[in-house]
Image (cartoon, rainbow, N blue to C red; front, side, top):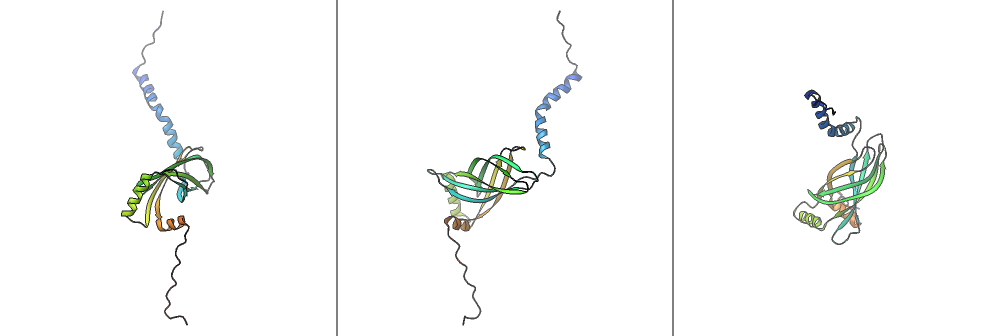
Length: 188
């Protein structure tokens, strides 16, 4: 003789259904709790420099140097990084690095990421420079550091680049010397 179980009463089935529906959200709630750890400041990332690298074909290669600043009392370990650089509101370059490193507690380090600029991005920027302001160019940097105990750390930075100064540094020429101030009386 087979024994059949009576169907669960509606009062018992409802909490089980709610629990099953809420189960996928539990990891998200846990992550949100970790993100709200008091006293943990986000890593600060700024553009420290851009240097040319050998390119291939129509691609331009650059080494983007990022200054990573850790304002926390625990080091930040990373195992790879990704960066996107937008110039004058358009995507300009992107790249990734599998380098491992550590940003010391209350310290900073420099991370160099090779990026690729397509020929179309160069043409788009040259047209923009020909029709707009040629002295200063705005940029937006977005990326993430991967790995470590807390997982991926995202970052953003914005600013302006002074093109004449950047061009002079890239070409290795020094700025022209300043003219001596004019004196009120002629030299004797």
